[in-house]
Image (cartoon, rainbow, N blue to C red; front, top):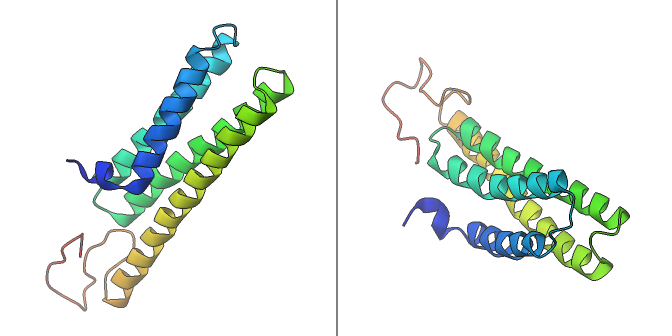
Length: 145
């Protein structure tokens, strides 16, 4: 099993992605551009989370998790547009909105956790961007410790 598959967040994303993708498929009259953009963003939420778990450096991880969260925000924007033009009803809008809000908050927690990893590294004498020991600390550092 890959690390990202172990995350509760990934399982949440899988669930909402399946629900939202099916909803898009069930609405063939939806504007093609909006439908494709929506599906692309949904895939991006999951794929950027997976990419972030594969990255070794804290800044790289944080960037991927942030990009995943940006995709969530863009999905919300598309939901508003779909609601405004009558493509989605209020009940379904609220359901999707609440799920995306939950995912956004979980991603924010992961982003913030990277900051605390970086800060712990700095406290041990490591540089925050390169994650390599500075001149005064010497020795090697395991990226995941």
